Amino acid sequence: MSGPSLGQRLRGWIAPTRAERQRELVGRIEALTRAMGTDANAAVLWVSRGEALLELGRAREAASDFQRALTLADEDLSTESWGVIAQAVRDRALLGLGQAAALTRTARARQSMVKG
Image (cartoon, rainbow, N blue to C red; front, side):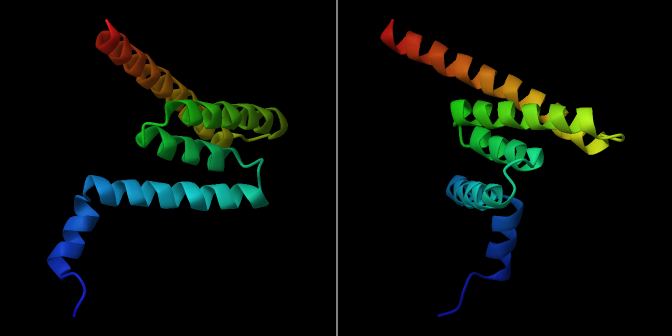
């Protein structure tokens, strides 16, 4: 029995199914979590994991990661003479916090509509 055809592999790469994308994101979260065990002060790890969590709809966890990334990026900016990377990570964390808040508001609104 052979594996997926070239066309199937390309389709999975270009337009993954929802299940494929979720598996990819879960794998990414696991890899980032392991990397945090080595360097828990790397803001880019926190913001990257937050982005993956957010895409999975896990807004509270994502917001927590974005907040940690923001704190670390601010610390980096205060100690680095040239903080372009820290600023980019900080910007991504702020954007992610806003998106997580919007997702949380939407979920709450849906819940109140169902209850009411």
